[in-house]
Image (cartoon, rainbow, N blue to C red; front, side, top):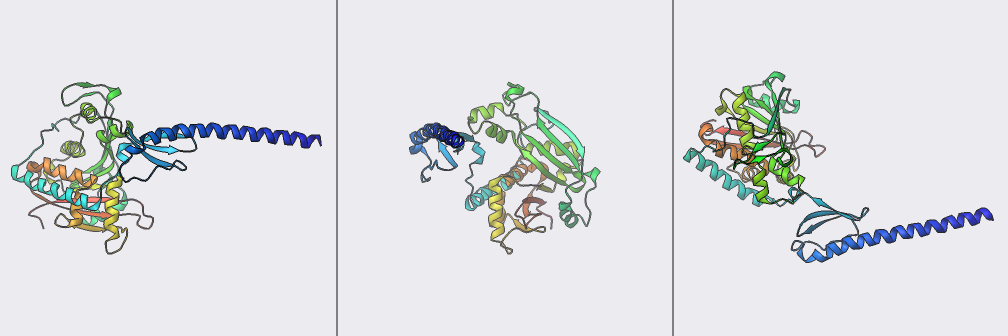
Length: 345
């Protein structure tokens, strides 16, 4: 009987302890709910009412947050996670970009960005390494059965790890550097660039600040040489004896969710009704699908390369191939742009 009394006493104490913890958790929940409810009228129009009984994404005037019920807390989400690109919008963007590409050649445009020196706070690490063998089919088809050797594939990693001056000549120290990285394989003997792992300084600034950064501060902290198209052109000029012969710009692993959404949409309305491996699906910019892909974040780099380097590269008629090396698992998405000269077959 004495043992039973002890067990009952311990059980009652445990119930009291759990009740106290639940009360504390509910009070924390109430604080978060009060915060959200005060700003509920400002949540995006037509967005569903916030249900804090489960993990939810919350949009408040001061940013987007993830609510974690277990910890009764709101965690800021990066602004870059907010996706809004649909197929029709991408197609319209692509059409405007292609008009700009054609106009740039007529005007013999060349960018004012100085690419003679990479510098700009970038640490450069050169290495050689073979391209993923799942690119072999691409190289064999385009280059008469040949594939690059390990020594022909120049892996150049750029990390922004040094101080630099911004576009106004103001010194940006390490604690304010924009950051970002461009891990890219350059294969000059095959006129090809393959982007392996990239994040622009602007995207990095937005991510690390959880979207809580102004456009003015972004501009102030960016180095002049920061865009993907400018950076790869600067490096290409150091590794290729004939930079004007650049033909192919590939993305080894597409991670941008907007781009993946557009690719998935195009795959699903294609003949296979889903992902397919090489030779994939190919579209020109005279087709809606080609324009939509040009209008994606991953197509933007190709577009600006052709716009800013129109004088050096001459008139080009881009077309794009998309494929997945793992179609059965719905995994990796790949994209390769053929920036073929207008007079080529």
